Image (cartoon, rainbow over all chains, first blue to last red; front, side, top):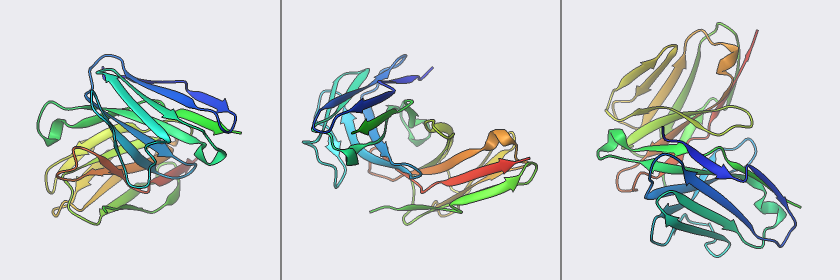
Length: 119
Length: 112
């Protein structure tokens, strides 16, 4: 159980175009999903928290108008990188929160990631 | 803001040797999680520690959470080539709605 998928797994696009990445929880519902970015040989950096039915919460330094997040259902969150530039090339990973109350049951399940290359 | 540091950044061991990575937070954690990421892959959840002083074992892996809930360690006994990857700790802080702050990671290389 607790499988998270991402689509596409990799994408190459031209500078200036927009790219949409989907994150789905396949066998559970997730009111909260998270979006991370990972540059080569670095750690994961949280970009934003996506809440079903409400606006996403962005971390400091992340441009909300550039990284559009939509969490329209309990199983799907999307991240759109608008007007992508080469510096946006990175590994984008989502996670879905599973929580049934109490700190010991609060877990995130990660998707396989999307590798974005902007030419 | 909260910072989570890990040492060492990189360790190269021969198969059969032990390995330990240490994780330190600048402030007290609510809980800490450990993940393993293989080259080219995504983080895979290993374990979560919640209680002060907690110790958990998974076969050759031993996880500890410090008494002050500001540090943690992962110890692998008798490493195997399948242990290769980067090990991340990730901390959650009270009042941050389960957001995870990932540590800097320790890359483990195991050779025969």
